[in-house]
Image 1 (cartoon, helix red, strand yellow):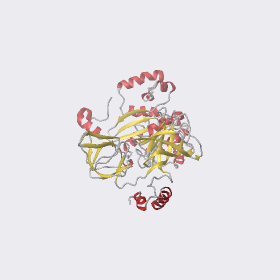
Image 2 (cartoon, helix red, strand yellow):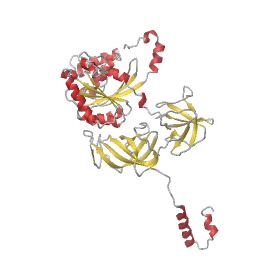
Image 3 (cartoon, helix red, strand yellow):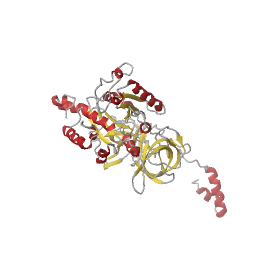
Image 4 (cartoon, rainbow, N blue to C red):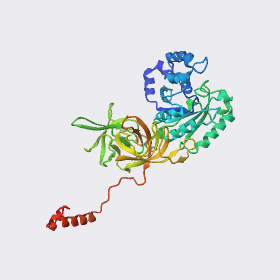
Length: 480
């Protein structure tokens, strides 16, 4: 395998240092069946020189028996590794691949296009910062294009790259490209993604994937200010996508190696934490101050989202797995019920009232979907009433748990605003959800008791059944 950087041969230590400090972009490819998702990834890896010689030899050999591109190498086989995928020429499971350029590291998730495997697409999208949505230039926006766009938007992906593929089959027509752009933008008015880009390409031939194509001179004019796909992936700004304001550390493990150390371990889901910072523990509400940020490589002066850390506090507080450490001034509500968008992932339909296990951040507890507000038609984004959810359905639901938890909106903090639903008998994950806030009447507040009325009622009850008691005996019940 050859790499674009000359530092590998000249100064390997400097290359490794630079490689270690590159930022990482996770993205998915999705779209309708046969839009060319796997071929696109294969072309990205091939043209960026990130395929080993033995890998290229293997898929060259496999192309003779399982390929769909005639005498040329079928690059889709690089990610379609399952026998059933190669036999049918489709993607079934999510395939992950890593590659890097001089500017950035990438992890790609190749997701399936078939409707029955939509749940696999949602799994791949759950950790992505960007989605490449392929559209066949011959057919335009399809049902799966809308479905995958909506799921990507639902999961909070802020950057969408609409790759208009197979432009070679429409003669690299600028007019056809503009038709598809207009069609998708009309649909995208219902999406919340702030950054949508369009690229005309041919993944099979490599046009505008890594190298600029001579077939689309109109795309690189001032009208479009066009970039190839790899140029977009290298330049998209994702650092601002992270929530650096709201501190969220779900405690995964309490580290107690000896009598002199008690640390609270977890992966920072959002915010920045520093020694000396005032923090609060939820759900108890106890407050303290961060003493140290401990890691394997030594103490840190600050920790950022995605880092696995251990916090020590100035005070001895009862903290267990599943508790959250947040900023002391945080107004995060506690509730045992909340609204959520749920993607149902099981053949057996979801019906309200059935008991499930829920996993939220580092906490496991029981609960149920108490009501389905409405189901969303992914083709039109219209809402309609329903009493159950079938496979791949998406709906706004009311969730009721057996205990109060901090309720975080998914778009504020995906790491703490999401959950999965697990069948209690089979232990199979049957659904995934994104929290959209507390239900109107569900916020957990301290119960208000009319103590004066309670005292009068108890006094009357005691005098009725214990007439020989004196006033001082009755007052003793109230510690007076």
